[in-house]
Image (spheres, rainbow, N blue to C red):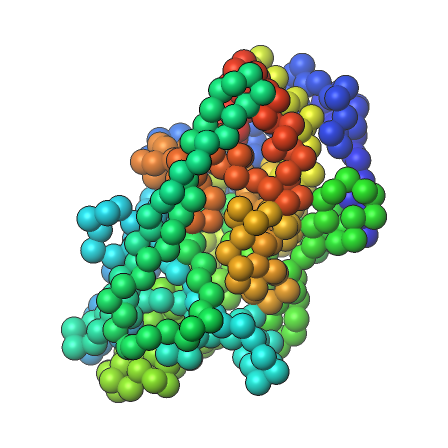
Length: 468
């Protein structure tokens, strides 16, 4: 399959870098990013609302799931048996601690006691001896510390280490002479609690992504995703997106990945179970036992909260909540500057990866998610983003230079919800323009196009992105 140029609904022109593309008005319904599920909330709580088309009874279910997402888990044994079993090693004691207000995480500040909303994934180069674990986990875990560094622990157990990012800077110049400073991160892990790491350890720092619209992304038909894939770049546009193919813990099959920075998880339920297991040290029926490695003997001997610590009922309630976090409506879709920015977005070719719209499956997991025309601005495919953004760490079929296209919906509300504007997988970008200028690889041509923009065009492009 390969990507085709498609008609633009508003004006009937094609959008594959065509210089003739021009938007003089918004498309019908363009402000409703999530169709009937779109919410009208634009303040700090904009990402925490239930889908607008949930019934009052279903909103009660949403609230129950929210309570398990928001409230802290405690150490076992405890009288609070429904919420005990935290750790022994963990990154946070509540989902909401990473996804603050259901929004975007950030790197740790200099005086932070732990990294909180940024994780560090670990692995080593895989060999034939790792074939089974790579098939199921997509990586060969670091022998002592596993697949993720956990920088917090219950009393009596040493945390695995302390995580910090430092930055070096360089400047990028636009054609009109305007300069932007970019920060390149340097990962620093100290106070290792269990001895040295494997000398070939691969590291990947990753901030928590926003939670909105995940059920709608899960409801995009597989055929629609594959229609945008062009792994051999047969159309010659320089874009060769491809799906990651990952292990499904429920079916035991290899399927298309959709969630995570490298699309390493196939379903939202498995993504949630993985977060419970690795981020909080909590077992589920999908991932049993604990995250302590065989070399962490004292850790493995600590009491747990039963098996599983997160019951299937609670896991289901959290799944309902995470499936139905609503996407806020767009703002100012008819503003001339926003329309000009949308034109520039398409002329630069950004829509080749940030696919504007899909229609969700009629057979979606929840009726409210079905048959919705959504505008997430992602293709959920892997793209080579160049050496500048590479983490060098493969995950299933994703290479060390590939990342899943992140959705752009809601990105303009990042400051309102999260109180910052840290973007990209490791939070290195301090604003949207920095994030754009880090694009390379398949996006290098689009980046070069943007570098030709003058101040008025840069402002228009940012106005469009901030309207999403």
